[in-house]
Length: 358
Image 1 (cartoon, rainbow, N blue to C red):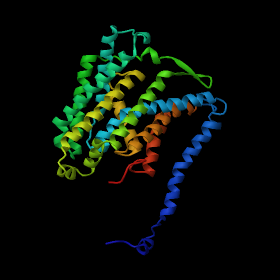
Image 2: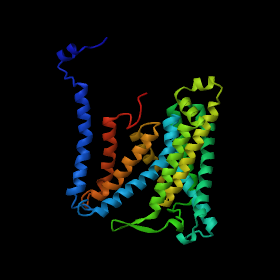
Image 3: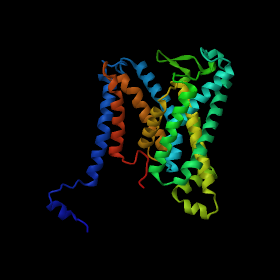
Image 4: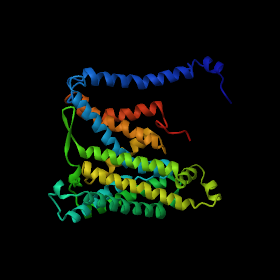
């Protein structure tokens, strides 16, 4: 039985017209954005980076930091967007795949260079970085497909079961990686060809960060073309919406989803090697990268690659700007402000920036 507007008014409930709700939602978004711009430009005198007016070079570095880290976030979260967003398969072992790939690549690079420690960038050629990257990503992709075919395929649509299964796999992987690779932090060494600095408005900036951003752009373009300009990409998107229809057309949906999981796990592995080069890896980093990936996917919207790009940019810029422009001594509040961005987005767009209602 419905309730009309007269009944609602008699109950003393205030009904806000849709137009007013839209204005309120816009205000909720615009006020923090404008306040942040005002703070960065003129009021952040006591922050580590200073104000943008007096220290434009620092602002440029913060923007570059945000963009390059957003590139890394996009690569590590693109695989989760495929697996979780498009296939609707819960994979809480995504962070473990990222960490596993980093460890494999580091071991292989050390074997190729002939050193276990004290590796200098001049010892590393482009092939000493690219070959471990590809080998590690393929190994992780094969492992991901085995995980999907053996454990997850039979529980499609059972979110709780998939969560428990992948959490169990994550715990087992973490123990095995600790036993085999040790508990010390490790880092993948960038090739010497990209390890130099250039100036940005009087500030030195590492070329390796732009290399990382360029790799992310290439991954994004190839992924978009694959999903939107190939027959396989169209089948994947159709299979997500209506598996029964795809099966009736004679298409092997099991094979299609296996290929999708392979690509998603490959991207996790690719991102793991980039993460190992950028920040290094250590036991426990898998949980951190899983959290980063989930935040990006939730902000952008499930199954949306435009959303993954937008979520990576918003989250990456927040992570770069918060510690730089908070007053000195308050940098530890940066993570709170970062997740405030997530709360703000979900308050205005519950399904993410580009997510669609089910």
